[in-house]
Image 1 (tube, rainbow, N blue to C red):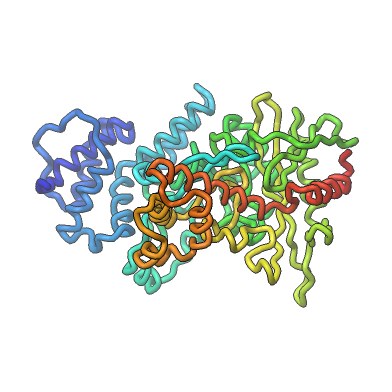
Image 2 (cartoon, one colour; image 1 turned 30 degrees about the vertical axis):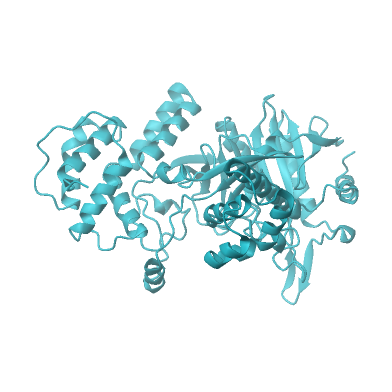
Length: 515
C-alpha cells in the first residue's frame, strides 16, 4: 500500500462533504483547518483531487491508519477507531439547528416525504448510519403458511476486542447521557462503553402536546428504520397517550408505520428505561397477513375488528376515525392487562410478598393501510415464566435458542428476524456438512461452538443427506432457519393456531363484547 498522505485525504474528505452538501464553499477553509488541527497536519494539500466518486469509508480508514501511526489514535481497536472517525465526521456535520431548519422548510415546501428523504440521506452521508457495515447483513425470505417471513443476520455491529471489554469495565462510570436514546447524545463525544455521536442529529416533534424527537437508527434493520423518542428520560409505559402519540406520528408521517415494544420485561424491547417507538417505511409480513375472523362492537360500529392469521396473537382494528381506534385500542389493553384464562395458561398477575406482578400487555403497531384507512395491530403478550420455561412461557423455548434466544420485540413480532451475527460463520460450517466436505464429528473438533446446533444438524442430515450442492445446501439452510423463526413466533403467541387456541382467543374477544 502507498504511503498515506493525510493532506490529500483531508482534501478528499472536504470534496466529499461538498458533494453531499454537508458544507458549503464558505465552510471549506474553516473545515480544512479543523481537520488539520485534529490530525496534526501543518500544511494543506497543494495538488488536485480526482473527480471520481469518493468512498468515504476508504478515506476515513486511511486517516485512521495515519492517526494510529502518528500516535494521535492511541489504540487501533474497532471502538477507538469508531470514536475517532465519528469525531472527524462531526467536524463536517451541520449544526442541529441548521438540520432542523432544512427539514422543516422541505416539509413545508415539498411535503413530509421530501423531508424524510433528505434526513435519511443526511444520516447516511454523515456516516451516522454506517452503510458499509449494514450492507454486510445477510437477508432472505422464507415462505410459510403465514406469509413470507424476513430473515436477517446482523453483522453491522463490530465485535468487541477483549482489550476493549476489559478497558470498558475498568473505565470510570458515567451517568451522562443516561442512555443511548437521550437527546443529550446529539454531538456527544462518546467513550469506551458509549458510542460517539458528534455526527448525530434529531428532529423535534409535538406528539400529544409533548416534546418528542425523531431520528434514524444507526443500525437500520429495514428501510428508513427510525426511532421516536421522549425528550425526557422516562421509562416505557403504554398508556392512553401512547396511542395518541403513535396516531399523531402517522398523521404527520403517513408514509411510515410506527409501533411500540411491549412495556414489560421478557416480552419488551432492549431499552425499557426510555420511552420510545420505532417506525419506518417498510411493509412487514404481518401487515400483509390476512384476517381469519371478523367482529364488530356495538359502541364502535364503524371500526372493523379482526383476528389476524399470524403465529402471534394479533387483533387488527381498521377505520376512518382515529379517535375510535385510539379509544378501542386502549380499552383492549386495559382489559387484557387484568384478563386471566387458566385453561389457556394465561394469568394476568402473580401474587408475591411485595404485591401483584403484572404479566399482560400488548405490542401495538399503527399505520395507514393501502385503502387509506387507519389501521392498528394489537399483539397480545404475556411474560409469565415457569419451571418448564424459565425464560418465558410465551418466549422462544430452549429448543430454538441455538437460533434465537433474545426477546421477541416489535421488529420480530412483525415478521422480521434479527438473528445474532454468530450464525453467519456457523451456518457456513453447517453447509459444509450438508455438502459432505466434512463430517459433523470433524466440524465439531474444529468448531466446538457448533455443539449447540447438533440436534438440528442431525435433523437436517436425516431430511436432506450430505451430498448437496453449494446452491442447494444454502437454499436448505435458509429455508430451515426461516422455519425455526416461525417456531419462535409460535412460541411467543399466547393463543396458538390450533382449535383450542382459537377457542381461547374467542373467549377473550367475547369478554371484550366483540360479536
